[in-house]
Image (cartoon, rainbow, N blue to C red; front, side, top):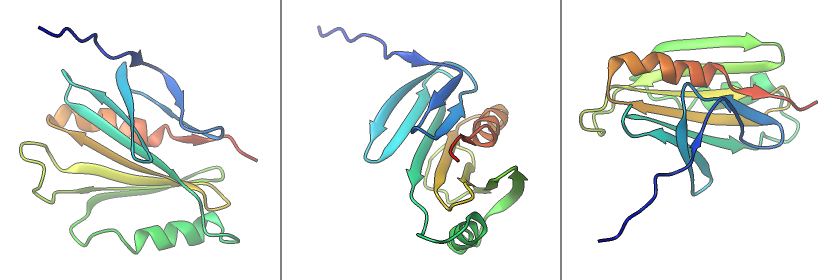
Length: 145
């Protein structure tokens, strides 16, 4: 019988890059998958995917956000758009039916003034975890100049 140890748990504010960070809603495990940081908590059934992407050279945050919004699927609902200083945030929910028992996911972006951005996806099985996913998305910060 092979014994595996439990993954390390991360809590509080976590750096994504030198300039980007996110506050986790509770202790979560972390892995890197392709170009994304993935935080998950199996018993709570919440998974957060975060990917930092470079902006279009010379494009400001509003232009980058407008371009990102062009790719939002038509079935998006519960749309949120907000400004926090030099950071623009946009989120929406989407029920594409491909996640089995999971509820409609929360997708979003956090866009810095120079166009660099974080792409966010939060997947959860229970309605009460929507607030935890929303909290993580709204906690994304950019500390660059």
